Image (cartoon, rainbow, N blue to C red; front, side, top):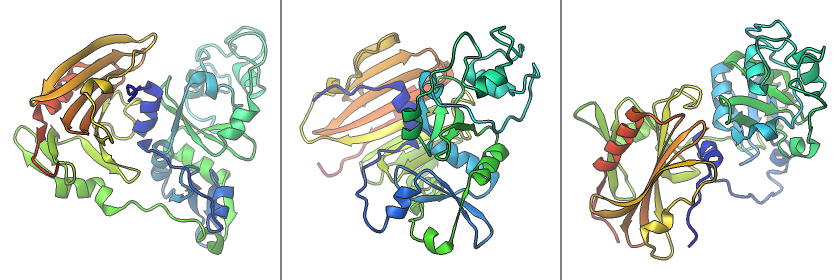
Length: 375
């Protein structure tokens, strides 16, 4: 078995979406959903309710209120590098908010594209940053921007998260293949409605609605799978996989239907990157063959500082620990061999090495208990 390779961008994708998408066979019943994938639909025969057709599962997600729309767009976001997102043309939309240098580009967009918020002409070529950005010229230097139309078409209808900056969210409009800045909740909601496509109730009903199963809701997990313990901690007891752990009671706990063996913990409200918070994943893994736990060692990472790379034991179980310092993030992962062909993998991610979060993670590791169950 190949060593598991963990790429920070893949992991950040797992944080904002936590999904493993399976290719779906297109049938006569979901042809419409495939054709409208990535579109925002407005239910014109009712009250103009807005829906987003997720390109990953071809289901429609209700956008609801401005905050709901904003949260959903971030939850379904795809993490991308700056070099790739800059290849998609910028749309003139949501140019709201503070504009320190009065060049027509708000500060948050200037930070996103890397121009100087205090200089209306960052490269001093006689054209404002806004003029150059909207006309696909490089506002930071000479020449034109490299616009990749194929990339834009491939990502049409997707929500992109700029993970190498501050997690800025963008929507790639399938009509013009430009990226629209989502900004604040009201901005995101306005964009959704502005770019929405009217649809009848009859056609909308042909697209399956995404419904969260009750057993995966945070409320259900807390009520049925956790107990409050001393020192402001809560103990999670896995109903299927015979393990438990303790975590801070004020942290959120989630599971997703697409990844039922992954438990997600965070102290962030919506976005741990923007809020300088943390996220922890606990994944139960079963393999077809029996392997030593060091097979789960994370492969060496180029241009990343390795902090720990060692074998250890957790509750008398063979384990392996890796930790890394990225330019904008910190990662610590522990793989534990529970039994034959059974493993538990835990990962901590923060925006920087933080002793408080490392301490919380280490305490969680020490609290893990393995219960006797079916072998």
